[in-house]
Length: 418
Ligand code: PMP
Image (tube, rainbow, N blue to C red):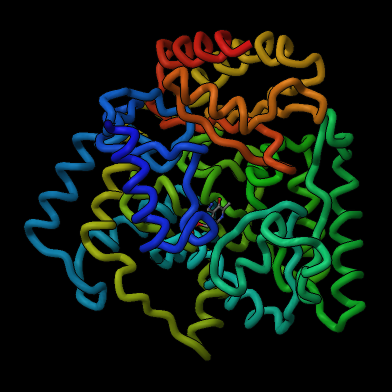
C-alpha cells in the first residue's frame, strides 16, 4: 500500500539523512509529496492538499513563468558569478531600488543564514564591537553566528555572553503589549547585559514579523524604538525580512516599511526564488566599503544566472499580478473568518498577524494543541504549521496567490475540526 511505501521511504530517509533532529519532517506520519500547482500540493497517494503554510512558493507552486525562466536559463548557461552577466546586475538594481534611499548595495547569497552571517561580519567590523541583541524566541539561521542569534533553538542558560535578548512584544494570553517607549528600555537592558561581559551592541537584529516568537504585531513606534535606540548607543540595525518580505504583510513589499524603518541591513531569502535557493543582504555603500577595505566575500553559487532569473521573475509576477495588495485583501478576509472559529475553540484564543501571515495562539488549557490542530487539518486536506512558545501558535502562511475560494476552503476545513 502507499502507506507502507511511505514508511519504507521514511525509514530509508532516517538512516541515510540522520533522523528527525538533523532532517526534520512535519507530521506524525510524514507526507510524501510529488507535485505542486498554484495553491495545491499533491501527494504520492493521490490526495491533494490546500497549501496554507508554504511561503517559499510565494507566487504559487510551479508558477509557469518561473519554471519557464529557469528552464530556459539552465538550458542556456549556468555559471559561477565571477563572470559578467546581466541577471545579477538587474536583480541587485531592482532590489536596491525597492529599498529606502541609502540602501544601495546588494550582496547576493544562497540562504537567509548566509545573508545574516555576512551582516554580522560587517557589523562587527564597522562598529568594532562584538555583541548582538535579538528578540527572545528569535530564529535567524544555521551558521555558528546566526544559530547563536536563534534564541528559540536553545535554553536561555546556554546563551553565549555576546548575545543579549529583548522581550518580544507579546499580547493576549502570553503577555501584555508594551508601549513604544518600552522598546528603548528593552534595548538598554539588553545592552547593559552585554557590557557586563565586556561586549557592546554591534547589531540589533529583528524578524519584522516575530515569526518564531509567535507572529507578533507591535504597537506603533515599537520597531522604531528598537531601531533608534540601537543606533543611539552606537550599534547598527538589521531588519530580517526572510519571512516577512516580498509582500507577505499586504501593505508594502517589505514589512519594515510598514513601520517606517530605515535599517542599516536588510536580509532577504525564502520566497525570493519561489523555491530556487537565493537570498540577499542589502546595506549602505559605506558599510560595504569599510568591510571590503579589510575583508572580502565570494560565494560560489551566489548570483548565478539561473537563481537570479528565478528572483527577477518572482518580482515581475508580484508586481504584475498585484500580489502585495492581494495579500492584504485576502489576509484580512482570512483573519475575519478565523476570529469566530478561534473563539469557538477557546474564548482566549487569539488571531494574530498581518496580510497572509496569520497565527492562532492557543492558551495552555485549550482542548486541542496547535500541533494536534495541524494534524487534524492535514486529515482535512490542508497544510499548516506551528510556531511560538512551545509550538502554541497555529501558523498560516500560504502562497500569496490565495483567492477567496482558498480562504473559504480553509475556513470550512477549520470549522469541521471543532
Ligand atoms: N531568518 C528568518 C526570520 C528565518 O525564518 C529563517 C529561516 N527559517 C532564516 C533567517 C534562515 O534562512 P535559511 O533557512 O534560508 O538559512
